[in-house]
Image 1 (tube, helix red, strand yellow):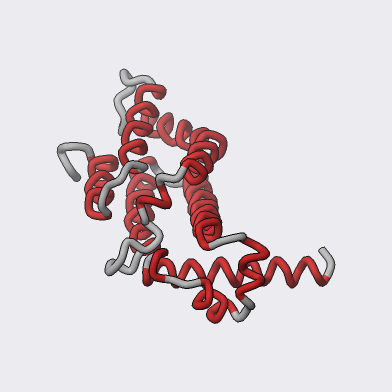
Image 2 (cartoon, helix red, strand yellow):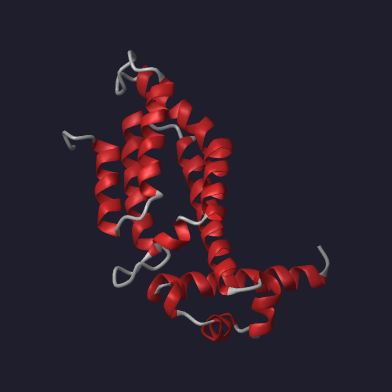
Length: 192
């Protein structure tokens, strides 16, 4: 990578980082390109050249965030931990992700309109299918081996259940409903 490419990549990362922080704190609709440019120490023109518009920038922020979270998920799923330890870690990470998407005062990056767009849904579905699903299948199989998941339930049925819950999460629901569905997802009707 030559000097120009390094500077370009650095600018893009600075823009994504500044946009992430501002969107998280104030919500996407309340942030102007001028604010992002100021925080990233770049010109507005650079943002428009790299991303075209604020909607595309917001999508790229989500893609970047999800990519980072997926890599973290893959990393801890490959650790030498029991199913139960991985499960607790996964729940903890999921709840932390809620805090990373919003400061609690606004919808932040958990904006339903953004998450429900076809581009974001396509990205999430493709990513889940190619990167997450194979790791998750191994996780389910580990749970069966360790007696934490009923062996009588086929792995494909468990995946269907998980996909149904993910379908709910991609619909227009509030942050509190997302948290409640997360609890249901991880602990079922019975709870911990």
